[in-house]
Length: 343
Image 1 (cartoon, rainbow, N blue to C red):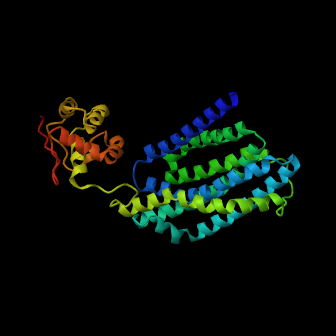
Image 2 (image 1 turned 60 degrees about the vertical axis):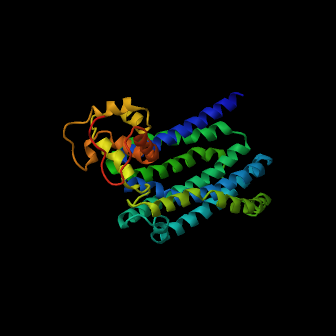
Image 3 (image 1 turned 45 degrees about the vertical axis):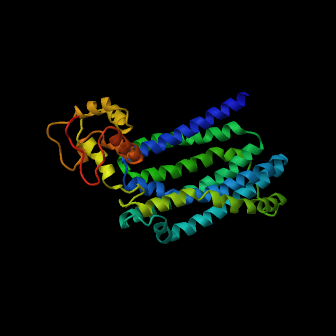
């Protein structure tokens, strides 16, 4: 029971730090082509890892768990050499051909956005090799039932990466985020290295390796089918976007209605605007409109300090905002700003 609680806490901490890493990148860089290129560059490396490395974990742990320590070391090193060599070769091919295949995954990006995505993808392909090796190392730890350290190493690596990100991102930009993600995988490989046991000459013709190949073949096809969602999502978002990124397109005058309202209220607090967007009554609307100044900047949303925080909210909850306009007696016009006359 104690170990179960420990593993649950470690998993939650790992998820939390990973969330903070991405949250810091988004809040510092803001929505734009750099952020889009960074996350688009993660797509294919993550897909390859989910399909191959994820399937390996399901196969390797049962195979290694029933072996003697000496046999386990030989087989673990054999799997590490094979997986490391396979992913290194794959990463090299993808790295060299990136200028051809990366633009196909983000056809909606402009030339500058596609070039940046190629650069960031190449950096993260290096991390893909480390992450694949980590999968073999985790399997060795799990086969020995050493679960705590296997779950704790990602926390150490991610915490170090987060601290480094806080220092490097404002100085070096999105390139730093890509390199730090790769460094995090490499650091995790070093921390997990003791679980492989003493270095031995791998036996690439062992029975375990032959069994693993037979068992993993049917898993690859099924995993490839249901793990392609992120790649398809980013492709469709890029294709549909009119902004040259991964953001959904602007839906006519309805989104502009909400944006004009935010522009008209540069001093409104985020709680009031949030309540208004979700249609919580005329009280919120009156409070919001009391903040409207006598004069306003036309066509420039940057006057509002809430814009950086509420921009994604407006896009995500556009339909609710339109419903709020309707429920408050303000039918959205197809083309035209919201009236600035207070109710």
